[in-house]
Amino acid sequence: MLTAHVVFATITGNNQDVADIVTEGLEAQGCQVQETEISQTDATEFKEADICVVCAYTYDGGALPEEGLDFFEDLPQVDLSHQVFGVAGSGDTFYGDDFNVAVDRFAAAFKQSGARQGALSVKIDLEPDQDAIDRLDAFAAQLVATAQHLA
Image 1 (tube, helix red, strand yellow):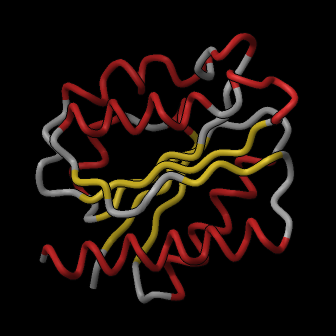
Image 2 (tube, helix red, strand yellow; image 1 turned 60 degrees about the vertical axis):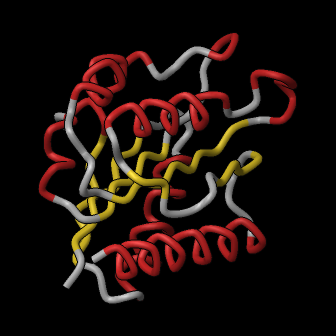
């Protein structure tokens, strides 16, 4: 059985919703999933999972979540060459070029760790609607398919 760890950072609750949807999608694919808040998680915990997911928001001017800075800085230092990763996040298109840039920055950090991208990143505008839920379910399914292929 594949294992997954979903880590989230949220202010409004939208990214916890995103994480919950991804967790449910991974469970529906037969994964054993752990979901934790980013400030309560050490990046090395990803070494224990087959699939690693971050769901984070972008703050003021494209900044990363303050409570997740240590996690973000540690992530590229962890050898995740045997893990598959995915990144999703909710943001607000009102912020233009800064819309969900944390998603891209976390994906880059994962790549530096040696992890393999298992699905294209998903960026959600505000609260997840049915279209977003469908996209996140497909994201979860693709992560599992990639992990199974590489196993």
